[in-house]
Image (cartoon, rainbow, N blue to C red; front, side, top):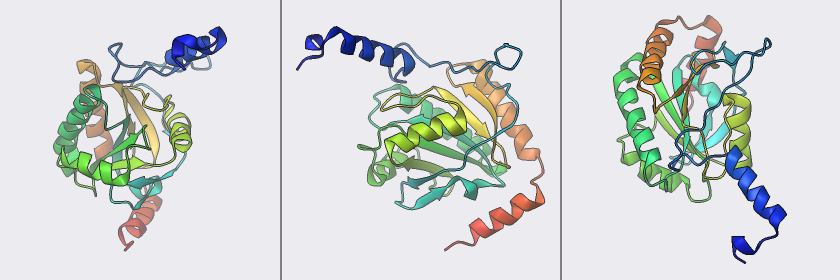
Length: 221
C-alpha cells in the first residue's frame, strides 16, 4: 500500500511525526531543542545548569558492553547519528574527529550513538569508525535497542531521538556525569563555545569519589 492510499488520519500521523523528529540528513537542518525554566524563560544552547545524566548501558563497536559510569572522571561529548546518512552525519562526525584530535590529550572522549540499530551492528560501526581513525578506547560508537536509545536521548540528554531521526546538538558531559552544555554544530559561534567549555571542564578537578570509580573501571579485564 502506498502512503497516498492510507486513510487521512494516518497521513496526519506521519505528518505530525515528521514535525516532532526531523532527520538530521534532511535539508531542513538541525532540530532545535530548548527547555523552559521555572520562570518561563528559554535556556539558550550551551547555557544550562549542571544536570546528572541517567546512566546507561549499550554495545560498542567491539561488541563489548559500554557503561556510561565507566567515563566518570572524563569529560565527554555525545551525539546521535546513523551510518547510512549520506551527508550531514559525515560532516558531523568529521567535526567530532577534529574535536577529538584537539582535546584527546586533555582526556576528552567522544560517544556517538546510532539511531538506526538494525543496520548499525557492532561490525558495521567498527568499519564506520575506521573512516575517522577512531580509537575505540577514546571514541565510542554505540548501538542497542531502538526503544532504549530513544529513552537515553530523552532521559539523559534532553534530545528527541527516533529511527534515523536525531538532533544536531553535541552534548557535553563533565567528569561527574553531568550535562554541562548543548551546542548546535552548524553554528561556528556555538562550536567555539563548545571548545571553550571543553577547555574549562578539562581543567576542573575530579572529585575523589569519582577517581575511585575511574580506577576500578580501568582495572577491568
